[in-house]
Image 1 (cartoon, rainbow, N blue to C red):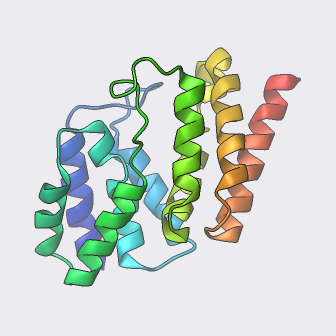
Image 2 (cartoon, one colour; image 1 turned 30 degrees about the vertical axis):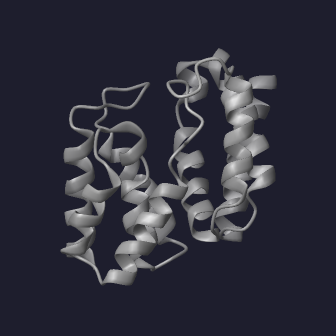
Length: 184
């Protein structure tokens, strides 16, 4: 499994290219690995771990789902390929500014929350890890945006409750702790 996950990591790293995290010069792949490692603490399912590494590829890179399918077909069983791709698609935001330029952020995020609410428990588990990792630096680096972002996360978590309960509770605690810091 480790060799497969390393190949998936390399694919994701290549797809994200020179992208860095919003608030640091850190390569984007480090976020993906942290999300995958958090998921690994609660699941040993290869498709879940692979999807954690690939969760932003469709949204943030030019890579298309058929490219992911082709890549995964050389590594995984057919049912694992399709399940991994299903999870990546479930984790890909649809209501983005580029496609909905007349909608404000609040409306896009509300629609996205409604969409994600209907996703699988495994996709929601990956989303919990993504939220936790995304909360790491936002308060220190951008406190004004942090207030908006953390409220969005809180609202989203209220809707996506099907995933791993332990990781869900950790995500809720992370968001609430960060909101508390802002309100002090």
